[in-house]
Image 1: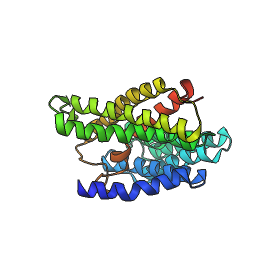
Image 2: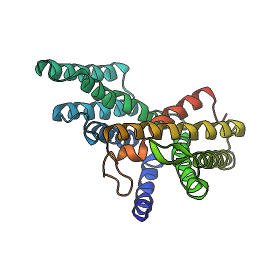
Image 3: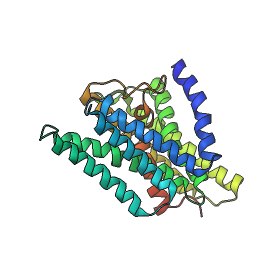
Image 4: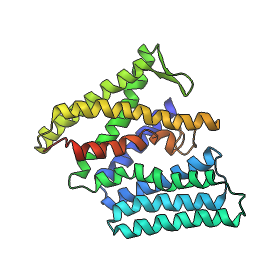
Length: 270
């Protein structure tokens, strides 16, 4: 726990600096690199795909998908990158004379396209006019929900939520996570109003907190299920005390695109 806290204290300011102060292209590069590492962890950390070239193809594709969102170039370049990735995967499949099974190709495609498309929601939100304000929302969903669930589960946890997939998660912890996320969103709405002169919808803020927290738990369980099936404890050891990128940002794969959808359909502020 001590290592986990120290790491968070050291890395969180760096993340905030890039997101709130650095040129927006730096955010695309940061999350692109994170997506590339996440792709590597999903393939090699689980042992699902150990083929070196396939891993490199997936990492390059993941980096490009996130970078494309930040560069603002034409859609044709994103499509071209995905097409090249798809072609490389099947070229390897044919070169192996049928020894490379399709399920490994499919996992590579998921790691190189679907995973960065989900995480890339952070880059897309950040590119908006008020992106530096709205980018806080998925982090509130993920981090406050996780913290609230941890402390509530530690104090009150009795009923297991998913004993097989995630034995430490409890129903009481989930409730604590929801309350923490709702409180975080209400404070966030207050900051928008008092600090930036916007008119936030506090009812939407409550809705955001509830839906975002529940989605964060589901996202966490999704990647925990993969770990259980592949028999690993962590996806990696890049972040001391936390594991790999996917161990720390597993719920972000769900809450980042959710935040994007909510902001588009139910704007938090006029």
